[in-house]
Length: 289
Image (tube, rainbow, N blue to C red; front, side, top):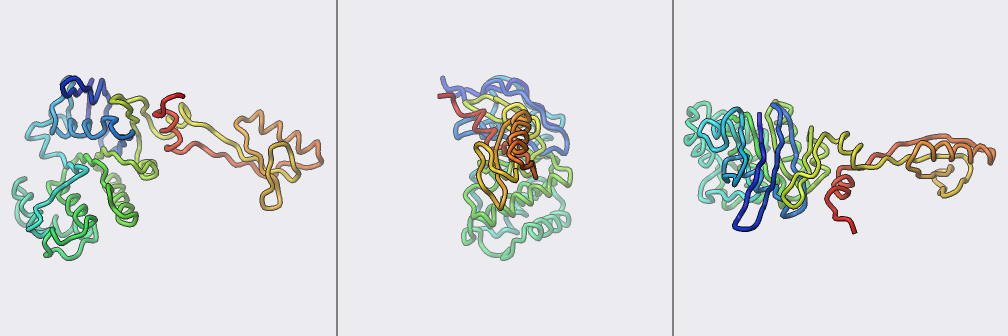
């Protein structure tokens, strides 16, 4: 559904994105993460056809980025999304429906169905009188007015309170479950981890790691084993009537078992802990000291 090949974007002598190549399958939710200045927003704007690559090319739904037919298949949500504040949500969305040549009856149903799903009331209130969270919901509704196959969202929960952010992330998850192809960036890695099929990690303009969460964890993460014993062993702490020792290999698990047996005790539980996406991200993106 999306193919990016050798994307490069240079501003004067500054290279914002260098050599980015990736694909996103139909119906996939693909996350792009990285520190500030990593090139995420520039990449998303090139995918959406809003920036022309210095080198490389992009196709979306079989069309070159920026083509009229591609734009009909795409919904884009920038991190900052100014609205026409004198309009109401309904008049604003109707205006964009007209731009996309959505028939009136279809547009009315789509507008109200989407606002219902986003739980947005006060639809006749001027946008300038609405909260940032309400405005963000209207911007998301705008991205869906043409019923696109592909959605590109730059920080969909940016600057919102936790409740509204969680609501929007859940809504994004629902869109993915309905078969929309979604590419989005977010600083909250828990949200990325909870809804993405695959992730690309960017740093200093380059994609430095990519894959599904299991693949990233295996390559860049760590596995820790919490071994619970009935007796105290080296490096263990008392916890809920037993003793817990954290080790990083199955050999160390077996050593713990042998130590407990030697003291007349036993292992009562072993719990595996995998690295979170945040830990993987820090392992990949943080420069070595």
